[in-house]
Length: 274
Ligand SMILES: C[S@@+](CC[C@H](N)C(=O)[O-])C[C@H]1O[C@@H](n2cnc3c(N)ncnc32)[C@H](O)[C@@H]1O
Image 1: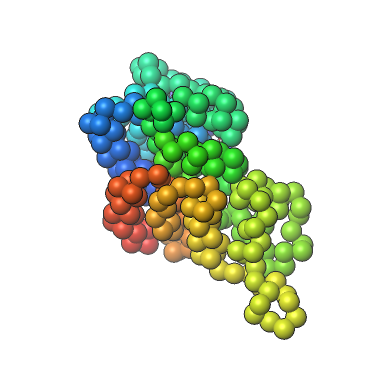
Image 2: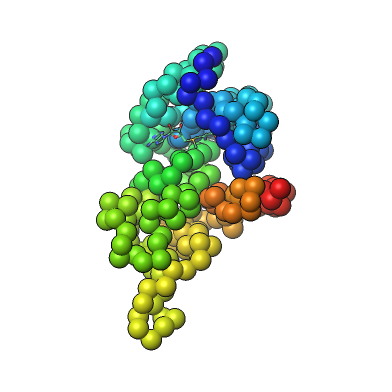
């Protein structure tokens, strides 16, 4: 396999991979014993292998981890819009007849070709990883997954992209196209109320709120607007300097699922600081 399109990943990505793998393992065991038809969905799948910044070694990516889980998922939907990465995934998954490699924008592919195969009434269930680099996820995907009640999601809340391009101290100087990307992710413009407060001063100036306030507002939105019944407190993913790079969210219709993820988050919470 060539390494032309392999990504070098930071320590926090290795923590994320461990968290998702651990939950996917528990999920596959429980769903198999309940005789449900469970599928794994990786929407921003990547090439399947990365290079660790820390050790310089190959690290299996989230789709490869899922393909190795025993008992296996019944099907795997692995999506990437980069043709080089999709091709590497195809090679890695060639021995798995139940793995579908789909090339394209996952926001369209999920809604048109993947979620329709995970109907609750057909006893199908799905674990879906939504792991973009930045603001590339469309709220319609999140709200559709919640409405179906058959799908649980891990979701990367891309704080670095938000801070770089949208959540500025002076919101009036933000490029409208960047604000538009935020609206697509959030589903409407209520992110502005979460990110800015005018009550702290006499002049009605918009004062930027801490990142954590924006993340917690999104957790509320996953529950109250999308309709996921259980959303554990998101896990801050930190770089080696301790700065939060993004939040890892989990959302599920099942209390037991959220309980398992809370335990896993707790286990890894302090390992993000090295
Ligand atoms: C952070 S990486 C995924 C890493 C992977 N989840 C892992 O942990 O091994 C994000 C991937 O999303 C892909 N991507 C970006 N925008 C996309 C989109 N709209 N639809 C599908 N894939 C996309 C990129 O090509 C990249 O490979």
